[in-house]
Figure 1: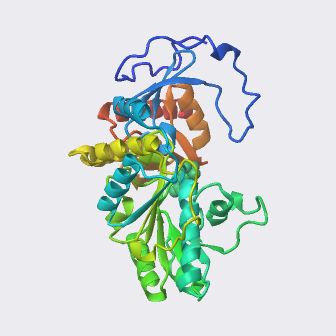
Figure 2: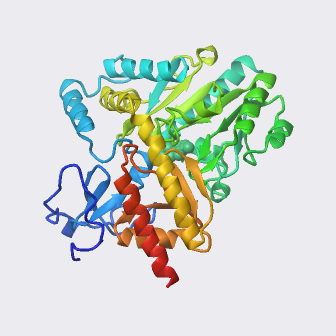
Figure 3: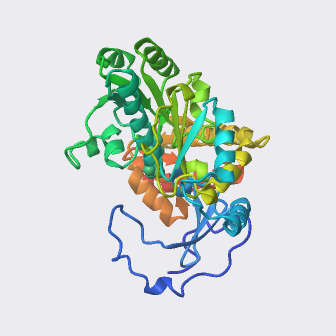
Length: 415
Ligand SMILES: *Cc1c(COP(=O)(O)O)cnc(C)c1O
């Protein structure tokens, strides 16, 4: 393959990556992996800032960023330094002991969320699994065994058995039966449906402030406010899954802050580690009820990942960082609206740098494949939706590059 393709070679990485890594990748086979996802043929060997580089040295402008994970872009110097320093100091004393980054991260997240206590885990699903367990334990202790959790259609909460059961994806419905019982999937943004479904076995309501995997579908403020009200009225826990929306993604540190509600439980993941695996459950201390042994995990709260997350959250909290997320968010949304007008596409949805465009009659999956071939990484969560989840330190240059690329692809398809 010629290294002159894909075409977007000028995506300026922070430090130019020169050597290509063909020595070992030529002999690599994909046959030894259990196929769990359709993957393109590229083997990525390096990433810098907004750019990913494959084994042939081709550059790609990355608007997926590890699935809304790389808050500061690929391999930022900050994370390189923290990993080097912390790994030289202390990798993992084990979950049965305190360590410094664990305590510092818990305090920082609590201070900025208004919640009181943190539990760390390794994935979003694991944090949500913890939230489900805590709600059930609380129901056993304080609500005569109430256990039902209301979740929403098209929601996504993870791939463990309980979080798949909580998830409202139609495609999950028939899988891995029997699922974990006790989840009720209701239409999103329909307060009346929730009102009618609550009974004395209901213990919690769980939702995403913006349904990410569903194609970037925002919860209406009145809906979330109404859910909070219902929780007070019926003594239910409000669980907000901010695995995708948290840590600055929407232009607020946490998306629910813009909705003016106070959850009992919030879960974080994805962007929290800026590329490394760490997730968190934050809770109101009034509902804290795990007994020793109820919850835990070998790698939970390890100092290596906590130190990275601490640096990421501090970077996001720096003056002007969130202002850039908002400004670039408006700029990208505006550019997408213009793209929509030029090519007869549909609406633009989302907030901050979690945005989607309805592609109308164009097949989004096909567009994403064409974009990949042209050097742009973009995600199609639905056949009619393209999603953007770039690094939060995005610049105007990358926005123009990405939208120009889509503009050309759409023009070519229409010609
Ligand atoms: C990605 C995601 C999860 C699952 O996180 P994993 O780290 O993949 O387990 C849960 N909830 C939401 C809202 C997500 O976007």
